[in-house]
Length: 185
Image (cartoon, rainbow, N blue to C red; front, side, top):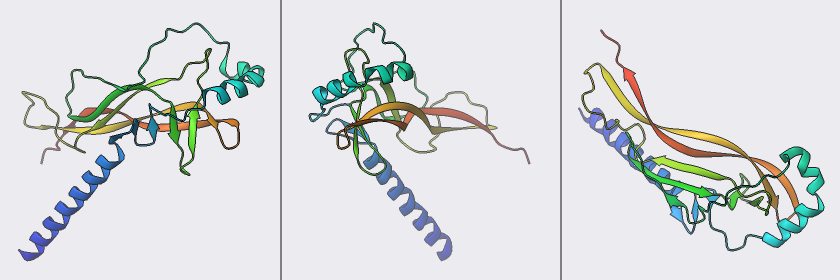
């Protein structure tokens, strides 16, 4: 009995620390969620524009010709809501201004008058593997909320090297409900 209590207590402490780590990673702090920032007072607009203009011919082949785009601003990280089967901690649509790469180097997302910053929908599950909010589910079906991630390839500006570089951003994009069928004995 003591061994079982000890195992359960250890498991409970592990769950608490995992939830604390997860909330620290995806808290909205000073316009940044994790390594993605939708606000950045130090964004070097002029430096990016000047560097881009001197190399614009090189980028036209890679990015394609610019097209007229509607200017939609998500600079403040607009919260979104919808029909959700899973509880979420964060659900925001935003235009990315900068990111921190794996080496903790700040990279700025390309934004010029011809190529606006991309927008993403960032969403995190409130609790890992929580049951979905479904009514009338048959007894032999279990549900679980899982964190989905998306990868987007971005053209970034390294202010230190004054160069553009590609960066693959992996970010939490949805908290999705899945159905699990229990095996019958």
